[in-house]
Structure formats: structure tokens, C-alpha cells
Image: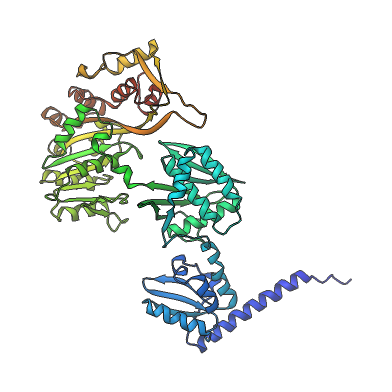
Length: 556
């Protein structure tokens, strides 16, 4: 019996043979023209290299850049005799590039040229910079600046058929994030859609759903700007880019991680304006603030601020550094990474195992600084070097991950620090949290329940300085939003507590006592705990009692 002829199979085989012949020919011609050969179907394409030659110049020349190291450029070319190619090579030489020529098949070249589609929506003035126009910012702000406004604008933008469609969508997302005071932008792919979420005042808010095609283009756009590899989707990548917001430049730190339905993206907005707040505007209680103003001007010692990620520790330390900075003193920081640039201050950044906090701190001490800021104390070596620096004529600012101020000392011991040195080195231990503020125009007063009054009385039981307790404890405030799209909160403020080293505490911590015993002794100093600070802010209408309860532990 005759078998049917498989036309589709034979066509596929013929195409494969022709492709192989094309690659073989390219390899032969490469030797003839004294060039290297490469099959670009097996190579990653570097988009930084691709951007060097515009598409309108690359296509007529039948050439494109696919890799770059410093000023050495790997150039794929299909026809060495192309006269436009000669002009392109002259142009690259004039720009200071050393060109390594590769002869490639037509199929290989098309693979590179196809990548220009990923760049086609780019309107930025230079790689890694995206411009948000004042018109877009004003439009979002003028029309309410809420999630509904952003949703309406995105609905209109996603239906556009113009080449700059993705640029416009991305610009709207950024403008909306600025208008809503978001700290982070999240893209979370799902089976059929991708969810856009904004972190506003510390909480994530669902904002918009994108179709898969639009998200793919947005993903390419963010990768292009961030300087990460387009064709890597199975491992985590980190990048950065800048946004021009009017005359201001805002840094964006970007993280990509693989997921079941595509890459998840988180963009952290690093607005330098957010860190320019004065230490007097952080929400620190006047009594504590007066003491800190003295402590941060000591010629030596150590101030440690503690709290979880996102609790505002860096903002607090930066505000202290700006306050004490002057031409007469030298301040050096070591951070991971340097998120905000401080004028007049030397800032360095850790680099994996090459330049750790410990190694950096050793180097910094040799630079004759007056004040040192260590982004985080993570290990015993860094802790001990920082302590020695504090003991040898430097003032050290740093952060530590503990739940409260009293937990600083046991944590240092756990890391391997000598508790006998704490009394002379650690002068201040602070802890902080960020809490949402009530919108003054969207709040209402209510009477306290009997249970709430009992709880508040219990919170203030341990406070040595009873003069800090409000005279009237009858009412609190709560959010009263005017619209379902609103929360009744606007902005955040800090809750703070601090322990100051004195002779009694210095002797006490030498024997590494438990955290609760340190807290009892520190209470004699008469400063507020974070819980007490939160209750006072709730009684004064700065925040709500429910917000305090969600942020710090209150007695039940």
C-alpha cells in the first residue's frame, strides 16, 4: 500500500537544509573577508550595543551591533561590500569604537534587526532615562490624581494604535504613581492578565489589569530602560534607570523575578525629595528630639536605629547627617546600595564579596573621617569594627534589624560583639516604625470606649515622666473618606523610641541581660515607647487608634 506523501514534513526538512547551507556559506565567506563567524541564533543580544547604531542606519548597511565591552563593539554584517557599511564603519571609528567584525547569515542578521522592535517605542533622550512630561503630570493631578483617574487614562491609552502607545501607557503609570505618592510599582502576571499594584503609604493597592500583549511590551520597555537582558526570563535580574520629572531626576530601582505566568516586576521609586525632610519633621516627640539634637553632635559614639525593612531608618539617618554636615567635618557612608545622593558627603557602595560592609568600614577609617554611616550591621566583624571606630574618635551611625530599642544589645551579642564595649561605644539605641497619617479634611472624632480607656491607661503605666500623658483622654480620631476610592489617610509619620547609654545601663548590659530587663531599666529614663508615642498621636488626631494597633503591640 502506498503511504501518503508528507508535504509539511518535507518542506520543514528542506527549510532546515537551506538554513544549514546558508550558515555554511557564511562561515566560508567569513574566512575570505578576514572576519569572524557567528551564529546569532545561539547568542544573547546586548541591547546597550544595539542602541549604538540606529535602526535607520543599521538596515541599509545590513549590519547591527550585538555585543559591547567598553569601547569594543561586536558588529554583525551580512555583505562586506555594502557601500553603506563602509560609511557606518567610518562613523563608528570616529566615535572611538574598536569594531570586531562578524560575518553572519541573512537569518542571523534578521534576528538582531528584529530586536529593534523592542526598542521602537523608546522616546527617551538617552539610554536609561525616561521623561515624564509636565503636561501628563499636570493632567493627572488636575483631574483628581486618584486611582479612578489613573484607571480612566489607562483605559483610553490601551486602545491607541500609535507607535508611542506603550510609552504613553508607561508615562501614565509613572505620573499616577507620583500623584498617589506611591513608593513602589508592582507588575504581577496572572494566567490571563497582569495586575498593576501601587504601594501607597505602606499598603499595596490594586490599580489596573493589563492584557498579556500590552504587558509584554511594558516588560520590554522596563528591561530596555533598566539595562538588563531581554532574553533572560528564567532568573532574577536587577537594574536601575532614571526618570526626569520636570527639572528633577528620580532614580528607579528595578527587580525582575520569574513566575508561573511571566516575569514579576517591582520598581522602587527613589525620590530624593522624600529624604530631604528635616529631622524636626519626622514626628519625633519634642522631649526625645531635644536629647537627640545633643547626642548626634558628640565627637564620638554610636547611634543605632532599628526596625524592619521599609520603616524609614535610612530617611532618619540621612536627616541627621544633613543636620550635622558642615565644611569642617568629613562624613563618609557605606551603603547597599546608595539609594539617595547627599551633597557634600562621600558615599560608597558595597559590591558583593569584593567590598563588604566590613571591608569598606576598614577602608573608611583610614580616610580620616569624623562621621561614618554604615548602611546596616549584618555580621560580627562589621559590628566590632564599628564599635572600635566609635571608641577611637569617630561618631558612627548605623542600622540594625531588631523589634525595639532594647533588642539592640542582645542582637549585637548574637552577632559576636563584646558586651563589655557597649557602655563606651553605643550612645543611643533607637527603634522606629512608619504609620499612616489621617487626612485632616477626611477624619472625624469619636469617644473612646471603656475598654480602649483601660488599654490606654495600661500603655502609660510604665511611663516614668507622667507629664507627657495628655490631660484629656476622652476621644480619638478615625478616617472619614468622602469616596470609596479614598482611605482617609494621607502620608506617613514615624513612631519612635530611644534608649540612651548611662552609667547604670552600661554596667547592666555588660552581663548580657534579657531584652525585657533592659526595657524595664530604660523606662526610668522617662522617654516614650513606640506604643506610647502612637497612642499620643492617636489622641491628638495625627493617626487612628486602629492604625497604631496594626503597627505596634498594644496590651489586650
